[in-house]
Length: 287
Image 1 (cartoon, rainbow, N blue to C red):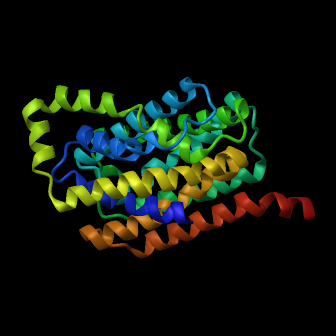
Image 2: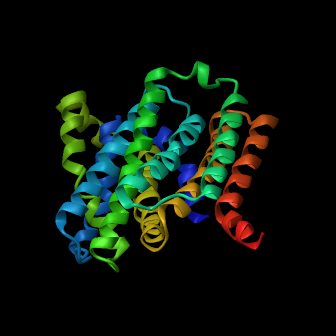
């Protein structure tokens, strides 16, 4: 639940950070602060470096590079928190061929009910799916797929080296996307604008970077990684479906994206889907 709240507020924080920072610069600063100087004091996890680099590039540059760009192109914060939760579906689809973890019937039923809730939330918005910018939608969907791929990397890494330190893993993997983000920022924005963004950064942007680096990356992703190393992907991933409930509320408070009765109905469906996913198997066995 701590991860849900941190990530739910994340989307508003990203929007605030990009008032003065470009998507690539926000990514570079976020992961630079998450990695340095921490990796000078935290021992590298007992994992082949390829797993650490792969996770950092897929989760950092892939997921957040696409998500930040989508938000910059006008994707509403609340809607972004909703669309990116399709990672749960991508995770289930990838888990069977990659991890050989077959989802059970109650997992699919739970996700279908939760998906109905997500659709109701989206349909209840004044700027519903039909009015979202197609580019922003596609980029956010791509970010969700990258998140699912990073879930696969965590599960595979835990099989290769069980018992590795999740905090060290997140800290060291955060170093991987810093240079690519910075190079893309220089390529897209130009050298002088990049320098200007750093020297002219205000309190809003600075606090956003700190939140994203310390809470959303180091704390939340350490907890998330720890969950994925202990439990099946199909059991953990659906919890992220609660993120848009927090995200929509936060966006309504910060940017005036008012919640409607349909959205609350959708949130109830999401909760029901999670209950089915978590306890449905026990209920079926008791029958």
